[in-house]
Image 1 (cartoon, rainbow, N blue to C red):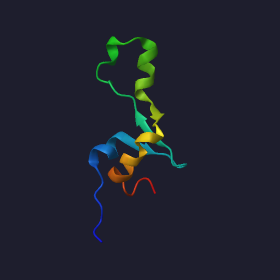
Image 2: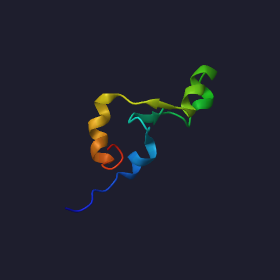
Image 3: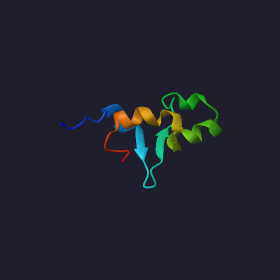
Image 4: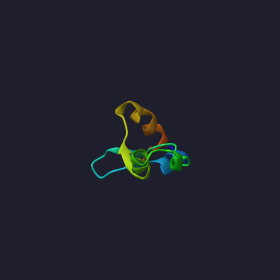
Length: 66
């Protein structure tokens, strides 16, 4: 069976922690200077991703989620 290819966009957008959680960065980072200071703080940090989208990531990151 041939190797499965990793989706390069998903590789850059998501991180998998040691415990297996999938972390993603908050969107709209390019326009953050027009947002309130309180909202700007969350854009540089990773946030846990919902479990409903994890089935798509299993196909995009075949070796990252195991």
